[in-house]
Length: 301
Image (cartoon, rainbow, N blue to C red; front, side):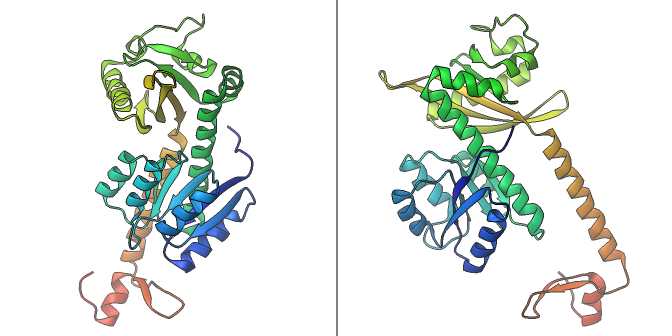
């Protein structure tokens, strides 16, 4: 799918230098407009008076961390994509962020070019999906136009995982050629394990009333899907769940390739009998290999 037009985002980080560097990287190609905030409190003030397509927030901030900010963001029903972008890599923080409704979680790395490219891709993907969801809600005629032109699966199920709608792309994925899908069960097209996993996700969406994200594999391919509750305004209850599913196999393969490359680089750096190290602008060490540690008489890590 093509990237949407200009996207406005609010970037939140308590480190002023990093905030400015991030803004410059993200605005470099001219497709993102970036406003900044030094704290979650400052961000909430801006969100009350300005409209953004997405929010990108650091996790480790004083007064209110990224997840507390996300919870307040959700409580205010701002209903825009939210991405956690942080140096923290603990698994429990990742799980908490996604469970609280974050669309994506990205760990800061040393390679600025690749990390900001990945962040931009996440922003584009999240905003495009949000715009699709809003189009679905606005009108039947509009959503038919939008969902049929996307190369992503878009479908809707009831609480028993029976299909209420699916776009042409998803029908092709399932091998449906006669257009007859309404009322058919998810289990007709998927394995028992796949069906049980999907049913649990749908149940969580109905019970929590919140959108959630799920990664899964099928036939050796990786997919990510976002489940969003559909409410009846008159009855004030959830009657269905809309799913937008996109293939991310290429991204996963690149991720694995990067891991292998990083490991090979680490082995070479540690095996050499030359000193390899990096310093910041103040001459402070950021990294040094084992050989250089021995030269300086430094033991341990």
